[in-house]
Image (cartoon, rainbow, N blue to C red; front, side, top):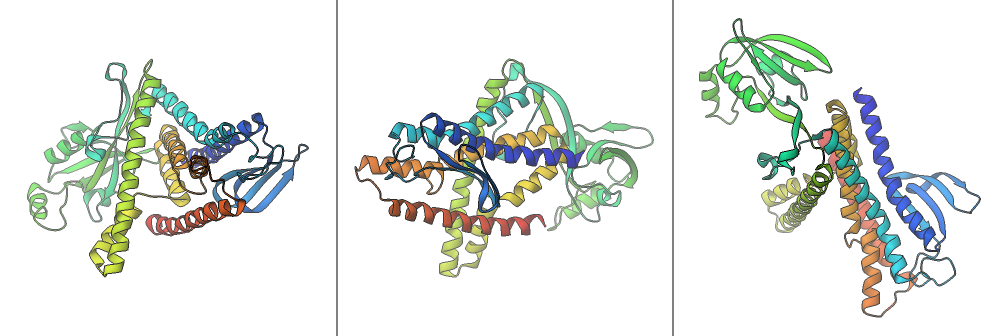
Length: 394
């Protein structure tokens, strides 16, 4: 099941790229601009087919997204059917169409999830605020505790408890403590501290029961004074909660989208701050600043490798979690593409409006230099992020 859900997640991720480019395609066609190529991935081309209307459908080797190639893409082109010959309003609509489609896709997915059961991923402990919801129209439909980090040599490790396994209950010969929250797990392990208990957990869909002796209170307290504190069971747990709304599902989708946008900007700020510390540390020879900056910058970003890893882990958590990841990626694509970064939609729009503001039309060569440089920087960042992701996940 995990494989099937993960594969579905990857297909939906590719669908986000197609939805984005379809937005550019349909709006360009409706505004009289000829589309020469609709591509998935970036060149070099792996496969291509020319349609009767002259447009080429292509698959390309670099899995960085997709593109729609328009006739006369430079602002200085004036031939009939070219992008350059379109009005400023038409050009703006064409460039913002992809962003709009990703925003709509993200909102639709979040609305559906809110109606059937949306994962609670934002908590006060994690991000300083609870996930947006309309309390009067919210019902918890699933709640469980999963293992996060398992301490090597701990009781959890000895019984084969793995990351993402569901911890269901802990019992001894006379009493059973059901576990559905991290607080209940903490209370149960504290109560049974030092005793031999039966831990019931679910591993890859199979219910497992194992006997193990928990650490005693004295052992836990003694370890708290060292650099390697231990818990009674030896696992860092996480709550997984699904909550459902009815009439308020669209409101929940909009409210959560606002939260995610704000948190994304905060993450970008931390990444840029970390990059600044990394550069400053490199120039001044401050190893600590450089190391801290590198950790802060890389922890906030992820590329295709990270996406595949997250979709794989999400597959073990269920379809709702994979759909949640896809919705967040869709909103992130919309947000990143609207930023004034050369080579991206927002960057092209910004450059065009800037040239209009100063009444200084750019030549084709000038546009190529600006957006070509932006693409080179993005490709370099892509390569670096991929290296970081490989080290992080493998």
